[in-house]
Length: 164
Image 1 (tube, helix red, strand yellow):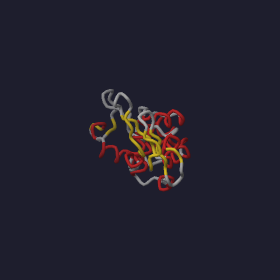
Image 2 (cartoon, rainbow, N blue to C red; image 1 turned 30 degrees about the vertical axis):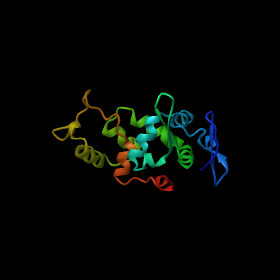
Image 3 (cartoon, one colour; image 1 turned 90 degrees about the vertical axis):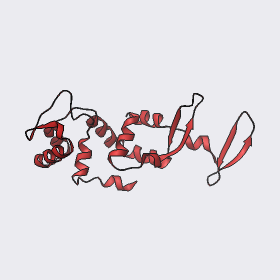
Image 4 (cartoon, helix red, strand yellow; image 1 turned 120 degrees about the vertical axis):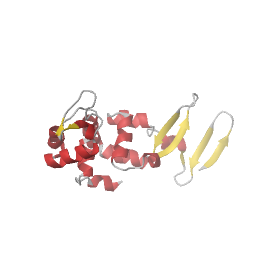
């Protein structure tokens, strides 16, 4: 990047490889704008990255603080493109992530064997099991646990993740 103006009023940074003003490169890559355009929550993008081992911080191209010193994450344009291409999965992922579920619902969602799901859940989330049986408690629900993450952990096919 090179500085083409250093007046006190405005600084315009130019990307030397594309000769494009940085403001244009960042346009529509602010995480809240991307999430709104995709019809999902900002947190869904972060949870998706965490669940599927995508380095979220590696996808943030710029972190800029506004006048109130609140940091704003600008996503890498290639990552925005990836999210846009996989928007339908992100919507399904979000709906699943934020809903209460049972092992049977997880099986229905991802077409895995009920025994494999129960074994996985009992190992990873033992508080849901009493005497080896799934016991939904109001205090403990499987909300905020992704059926797709469980399927991924059990070897489900998520080839599209490798394309990023």
